[in-house]
Length: 467
Ligand code: 2HG
Ligand code: ZN
Image (cartoon, rainbow, N blue to C red; front, side, top):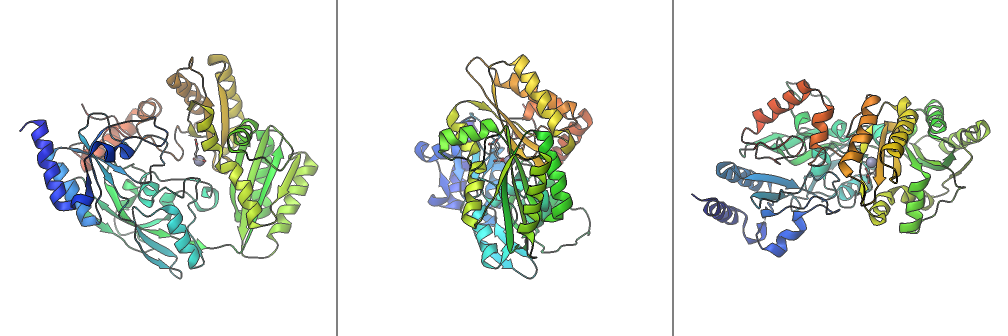
């Protein structure tokens, strides 16, 4: 059968299984699924399948498997690495999980939430909050990002310091394998050592090993008191001393510790019209602690007072209300959008050991200034996790791949990683090969071959596509 006839045959099968509402094939309907929100990774889907339940996902995968057609899973369209868009061949089916958005159960005593992959993160957070509990994954894109994508990318965000990455919050998982087999591991257990913990293979594998259809997530008690502070600090080393003091004084009540460079706040002021309430400085820290015990605010005040005395902070403010805390967070959360408005930028989502952050920042800054003059770094990130978004604004004269290599080579000198939380997608596929050891890459290919021997699941993401 010709490729065209085979595709027509597959589409007819999919339409009869999914119905008209479950399969999009018109050019205009496909457009929103064809590229990422920054329009950096455009592609062309053969069709978009929109299954309403796990059985339908299984049927789509089985049909594509039989036809040898690639599948590209897509959630809330908030990724930054091109992990959810098809290639330009017009031969891949996008699998949109958006219709599978039910929250099946919130258990406030067992501290769990069960939901389908297309459930928006904010909706799941709100459902947990309605029962007095917290779903601790939190990130700027939470109003659009879907749980399936959060799990498939092992998303990080602002609360990793206290609660860890998504990986540590997934108790149970349901996935569909490349051939359509449904594997139901939806167990609400804190402790489960019965055999391989196979769900970990799928978490963070970016849809290249199987499709996440539902999950049981771990919730935590909600802190009754929250203290959010914005501090001006002279340099990254002072910010690190502040982090150490916060860990000594506040223990594990500290849940977020973000570092923001002067230029990032300038972008937010220019493009989002938001101004910082404290005095200007080269670096700013946004930190948050939470506890149900009394005395948190006083402890944060003491910490701040001592930091000011030592000279590790030059100015600071503690939010007086939830609303004020929201405006402090707005400064941080608007950086990505402001950067997009400022022009072309090259993203880096790197991590280094926490004590190495100041030296890494100095080394990367020096390397860029000498090897790519005229570039403007936009540096911010999750300092408490060693994760810095060392983004670089560039002009037409700059080569994005060269900028990538300059920053990543600095990361490698400090034993870091080229992706801390955004994933590899299609954006970092070649850089992954450059930075991971050959034996690690060979192991990754053995896992891929075992679970997806035809290479049909999210082809060309994480690992190079087979030719
Ligand atoms: C954040 O920390 C996100 O706000 C996005 O991970 C980072 O825009 C970026 O590069
Ligand atoms: Zn981030």
